[in-house]
Amino acid sequence: MAKAKFERTKPHVNIGTIGHVDH
Image (cartoon, rainbow, N blue to C red; front, top):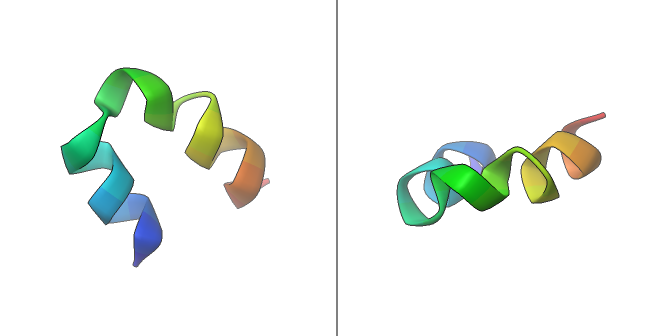
């Protein structure tokens, strides 16, 4: 759920932040 939230907030940061957390 946080993934979609971050993607809407900062799509350019989601790659580094979410990408790291998701993996």
